[in-house]
Image 1: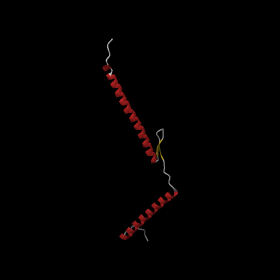
Image 2: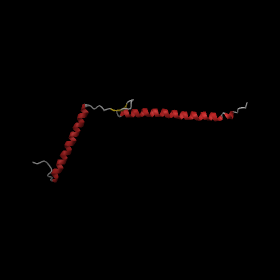
Image 3: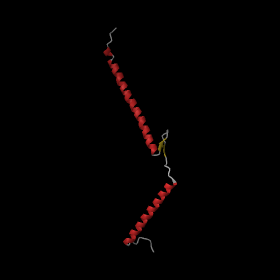
Length: 102
């Protein structure tokens, strides 16, 4: 029976050490990817975008109060009125005949 030497087991020990290192790196990547997915999901939920489990996408609509809606509509009306009044004033100032007939 041949006598075994401790150095004969060295390649096996090195193989296990390398495999353990690769497994640890793989586990860290797995944990990191899970955290990244959670952060991305929370970020998208802040923008009212939700992903369902089956891969669907649902986009939510932010709530808007009646007062805010009326304010936006009034602002748009005032801006349109001001712009058209300014355009008519410029046309009359230049003597343009494109304005309304009298």
